[in-house]
Amino acid sequence: MSTTVTPGGVRNGVDTERLFATLDAVGAQPEIAAFQFRARNRWIGGAHNRSVIKDLRGAGGEDTSRPEAFVLDAGAFMQPLSANRAYEFIGRVALGAQAVLL
Image: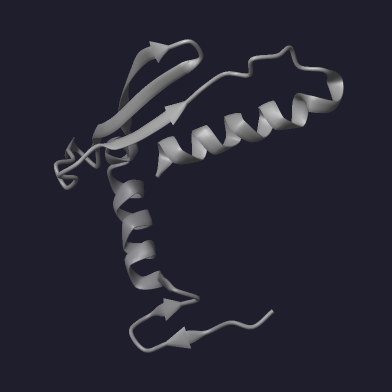
């Protein structure tokens, strides 16, 4: 594995100076590490539902940097899961969770 270091403290695409400054700030003031993510969900019909994600509070204040909400449409399986289909369910849950965190 190779490591790329560029001027200004960027290593493999990560601004390490800023990363360590953030870690120091959280160490000095742990309450700024508390985050609250908010999502709203609405049932559309059948197995279809829609989640809307925009608001969050973190680093000591309300985040207003997103002009538009992130919208995720999802549905449930229409057939019972068998043991060999459980991986599909786990994959969908993981994908949904990842989408929420973005």
